Image 1: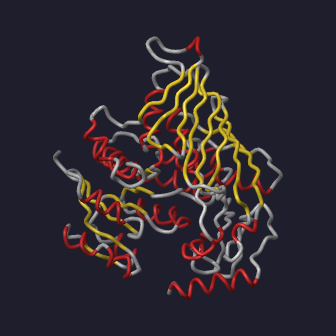
Image 2: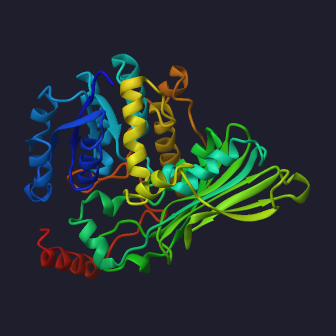
Image 3: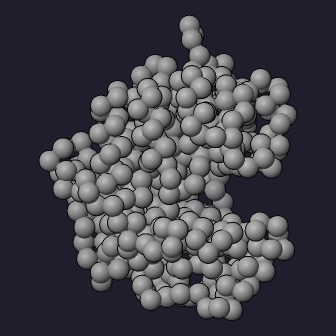
Length: 417
């Protein structure tokens, strides 16, 4: 390869894994990192020294350094769009680690910035690249299951109140205001990737169970949000956002006209397959369990098992490098990425409005997206604790003074405030 992609990484707590992955590729160089927290920078000092990486603590200086062609944003969840736009305005390609936008106005602005600057934008959603999801996509694309008619996706991540407090130090910390619907990508993105579908509409109902997070500063008393998605081809999918019922893990199910396949949380390395007897491909069994694989090469499979998020983090670096260097279009380009954000935003509005249906705009179409260009309603608070829309299905829910007292005790004990 005649050239390498130079990349900077903004935010090294989660970004530390990507520092190593990008630095060890043959076609990429990590030239700069930026984080305002010296403790996080100290944790990766070995990488900084080994790979001769420049360190910044201020984003403005970092983004003006001229040291990189692309930046990976691994900053706070609700701040990705503004930083992505600033980077692209300077001609820098963007890899966004999580949901790209928190308002519909940001969705519109991101698309317009990509089109105006010619920069590449990609969502670093890694769950579609876990072995069972890659395996199901490969099988689905053979046509053996027919067209998908119904799919399910679940992402479940319960934590103790103490751990929740350590993840969200401060009453105004974004995690305390994060609606269950907003962390939608791990549940929905694999289904879209496997089937190739695009979103048409969503509606949502949430399960209110405030006792689950007593002792925290969380403004969200919902345990789960159940989102029904209609696809453009007429199929349906039932997905969760980030749910918190008992048991941690993910599950995906693809039901087609001729059969279905799914993985189970307790056995993520396998795919369970069931064909209708009269649709079973010749030479196969109607019911079978197969080992999930990325490649036929077993050595490659073994290597990826040791990479973060079930191999998904390596795939993110691979797809992004091919996008920037070889112009190979990724599945989650800016338009598909912001459609995920829009699904999350509209699902929360649906939850707050009796399960009403909301249509997802076609963000490739200027007439459709123009309708939402000034919609800046957000569930995340300003410095005074005011938010533009409810983050919970019960808008009047608030932590008690006892909840706040316990949260603040945890923060002080951990040294986080």
